[in-house]
Amino acid sequence: MDELSDDYVEPKSITLLRRLVTVLLVVMIVGFVALILTLVMRLRSDSPVLPLPSSITLPDGSVAETFTQGVDWYAVVTTDRRVLIFDRATGELRQTMEIEK
Image (tube, rainbow, N blue to C red):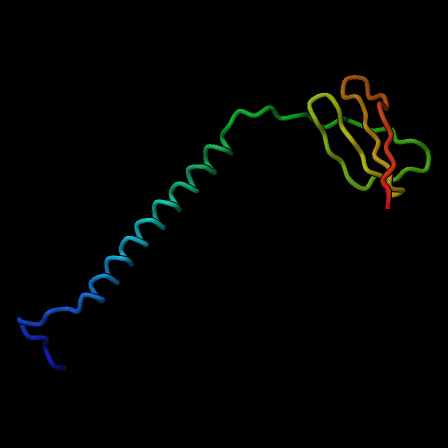
């Protein structure tokens, strides 16, 4: 293999490309570290954990499909296309909504 001579001058386009690749590497590393820090801070936040209700009494014939909750309510979507919203404190049915096709 031929050795490069001492008077070899690298083309400017190769020098520019090498610098751009180095800058891209630094930006990607900084972005990855920022992403990891954001995830760690988000997962360690002291957001309130809402307890699940011990039991939910659905109206006759209703079958639960999905469940979601808020601070003072929780909702059950049933297979017959209704959303049942319950009061968290009392467990009473607050509101029923029909889902249109």
